[in-house]
Image 1 (cartoon, each protein chain N blue to C red):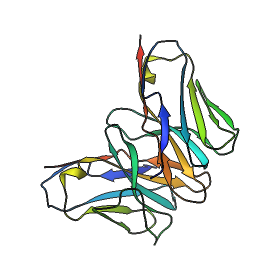
Image 2: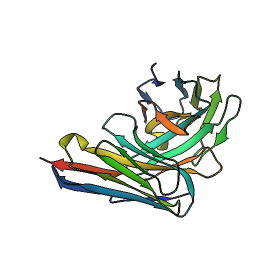
Image 3: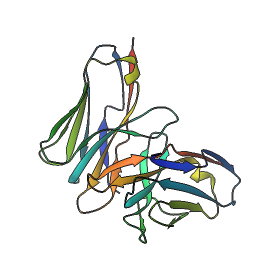
Image 4: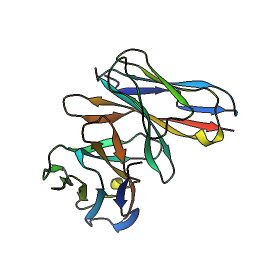
Length: 112
Length: 111
């Protein structure tokens, strides 16, 4: 049982490049989330998926798209990366029975 | 957007001392979570609270869900060096799947 896994761990992009951050969970959780964490800002919700087949915007969705590929996987895509998207990105999922959220190890993204 | 005020922002304490931190909000939450984050790692869940007034312990950690459902506190007793890290509160907005996070309390323990 690996919990929540994220790939890649680190990534450097040039402005305008695109990339997809991958997230998978093996805990059979229904809800999955993408956050970004910036210094002194705590974690801010980008998008979430309450269940397979649904996605909704969080606090800071601009510049991002998501896909809930199946119950296990929830990907985050940057179509045209900007320096303001330099951040640490965390994926999380919820245990439906207790509404307790579990986090992956994060992806550290730098946009030059 | 929604705001969670977490305080203090940082604190230095002596090993063995007790620590207290809290979160307040203008919104009502139906779940409060407390996390610890070590450098380069994702947040790790410490305590989860599900009912107003609930008091829950996990070893040296104790947390309470405020009666008004707009606040929560976390206490750490007899701190040790490995308690160093950033502690976050998070509240689940009532009727939604959304969680709002506090800005964190950075704890440093002096041996």
